[in-house]
Image (cartoon, rainbow over all chains, first blue to last red; front, side, top):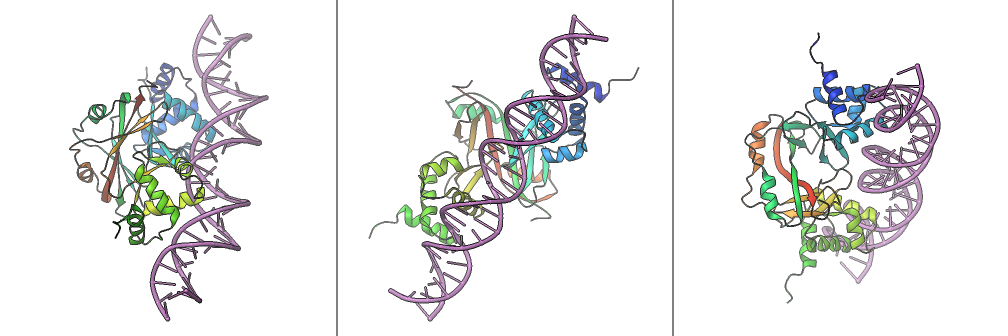
Length: 142
Length: 142
DNA sequence: TACTTATTGCAAGTCATATGCATCTGTAGT
DNA sequence: ACTACAGATGCATATGACTTGCAATAAGTA
């Protein structure tokens, strides 16, 4: 008996979320797992090498996002970036204003600032996620 | 002698930045000063009541952004929000996933996390700004 | 194997934002 | 004040990310 493959793992993940485990979606998840940094739809489409139509990439990412399997990262106002959420630590990003280069940032012992934010507002009943992103210039651009 | 008006203040601010002090830009800055929360281009255009063409709003915001007079806030991937930067404290936002309602959040004694982020990267020469945004549901939507 | 319904691809549409170009206006120099 | 020039504006149009309608296909289930 072979041990559980990634193939199987992602198929189960999809089915448990109530989604169908299609070859395209499994390839998409395998790609995102291999890739440490958030990708744009364009990058995903290219890296998938034509096995999935662009529209399907959008629709799949949207389905996966609604199931919280992937995370949508707002680093620029005109390109959404996506990364795998399932089974990953919450982390942050550094973005170069010059070339758009992205790097993951892990801040050790990061506090849970949602608690503090909740104290500041009376208009929200839930604040369950936050994003902390850094901007600057990479060594090439700066 | 009248004391310095906002008109004058913004005109100087623009000229010091190497930009021309046009009536439209001064109205735009006055609007942003009056408005505590970040606005979309569409909201700005409407609130300016036709004194400025939509394209000019885009171009002015871009010019002001490059001079760091306004701040571009990435709260959603498909609508940029802008707020006055000059003379304001750095603050954060809470965004409702249901209706898009935005509230400003001031976290007292917020640490300067750029320092910590700089320790994490060897690829960046500068990390000078960061954004900390919260997401959840407002009381109407949650 | 057959059935049901989610998923896919194609074509076309929407919407935010950008650009080319001619005109206008702030501003510096006279 | 007058001029000249570069920056700013408006209009029409383009771009590019993302979405939607619809018919064809394939995943899950009995």
